[in-house]
View 1 (cartoon, helix red, strand yellow):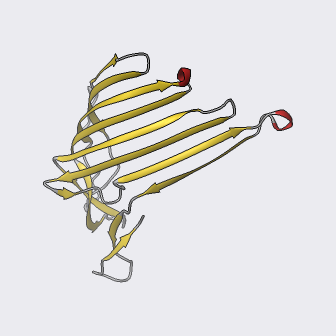
View 2: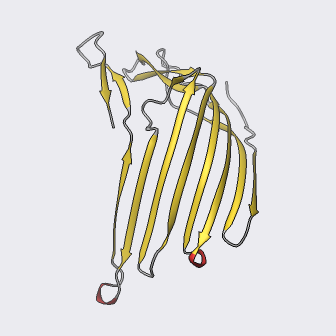
View 3: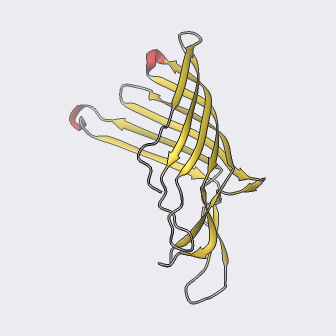
Length: 190
């Protein structure tokens, strides 16, 4: 089926509580074409659903430091889930799963701590389920990240040194090895 146009509405609102904090809410529908294939080689129908989010944003140090805390939930149909089968070309086969519900929270803190040092840190938690079963095993439930940069001055002006780290909870998947028909191995990927 070929679609000539897709309507994807978005609605959002922000309310300033005071000079430092504002609350917001948003809602949008989801339409995302996929390239995942089923066992017959057919591409899955586009991912469809809706997403709603509410949150709190903060701004400090005359705007040099920002923070956000959000709760979100998604409802998705045609969610690609591994079937343990293979596509005709030998790739991993997927099935389109209806009624997947995802919810989570995100926290971020970012800003310019000094004239030379910037920082970004964040934490995210999300869980995707369908009828009580976890359907997103290749995506971590917990993620933490922290990055920082330092801009040199004087003779080193123009040089920026940066680094960061990211931690995530474990992910897992079931894979089969070519040449070992019927054998499935459980691998912890993260």
